[in-house]
Length: 335
Length: 286
Image (cartoon, chains in turn green, orange):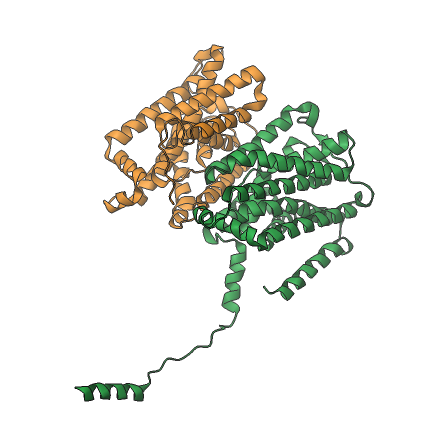
């Protein structure tokens, strides 16, 4: 994709995002779009971990939950300003990401996945057990943001800003040497280390960044839900984030975005799918892994390759007969 | 106090049985399947379904649990493992088994309901039996039998020796004329049957509950990692340790921090001895 094309895409997407509240038919669609943006803030960060550096973290719902609870407690219970609370929630989740990443990022694939999954379960346990802080199983109301962002449409714009920021940050990482280094870690850690990529530090930095993104996303998500309980952050949500990235395709930013947009909207628009819920996500994941492990984006690429006219000019190969005859004649003359 | 120890041993035996089931699959395919805990869940649910809902005698329930477990093991290999192993990307099997696990858990949740349902008594016994209760002794006895049976199978039978050969070096086994694909399928069916059996035996302890699978996958894996990947004795030791630790933690601090303590154990062992108590030192390819 050349840069003019890309600019066109970005402008179109921005126009759609900004104009959505004006042409959408009801409030629910705006709510759905805001939800997609909240998810995307987290997934953009997670994409660097899963899609680029290839660490299969299936426990990011734990970080999302910490972010949401931190925002609710800081802003609601202790009365801190909303945006300071968001920043603090992000910082806290970054710290949690650091503490989780320090031991677990040294582990091989399956061990790491299990460690992150255990982290998600532990956070759920703590949210239930620390009733005085988190309200236990009853839950906790989450305050709204101040004045321009306190209506549904206003809040939607806030989430759009957050999503755009997250996209820009991850894109900046991905397109530069650092992102290439992450891809090298994903494809072959030994080689990456041999050519001078600081493997562990790069993985840890990305993981902490994804933690911060998850914290900010969690704060927005909590405020959108307006009431959170430990059940809001069930483990299947984590799986959902993960599936969005895998389906969208690893090592791309547009793919996971389309993944989260389609997978969030689809069950709402097609009623039978909502009933199947996570079964449907599991099935999709299985199909993608078995048929196109590179992600759905690969299918479009393949179709585009089929449709595009062959660019190379075919060069017919014909023997140069007179020259050949001459050569043979000269050999026979030698004899 | 005795009650705490016995119930800890019982739940630990279930973890150990899950870890053994991991081991059987790992030995032939070098895959740690996320579906391992779900196999045991299926055993429990289908056993309860056959006995309570269909009103069959207990031995038919047992057969149903084993058959369903074996069938699911076979399906896991057919759908999630076979094609994926042909490619060389090591992460793919994690994704495909995760997808299988999610699907089966949701399917059971939709069909069976999301509430834990009681598992019927297998042997007529009074509920006031205390530590002599069958719900404690069935899983403990079964885990012991499974470990001894597997050891016998590996050491004394030709098929077991093929398993060992494959776990040592699959290429060399293939070169010596072992049909590695068939052995792998057999290992998945055996692991499925054992897992189903374990879930059936521990049914009265865990209830027939659709979300049990994920917990068991995690705890069985912790037991395996603590004991050492590939070692059956290690799986037993790891499982029993984890179970005892879990119940003692609940007894002393209340039941809220079970996962935290389990993962704490895993982290300590991985920091001190990364290959587990009885595991073989792993060599990293460079």
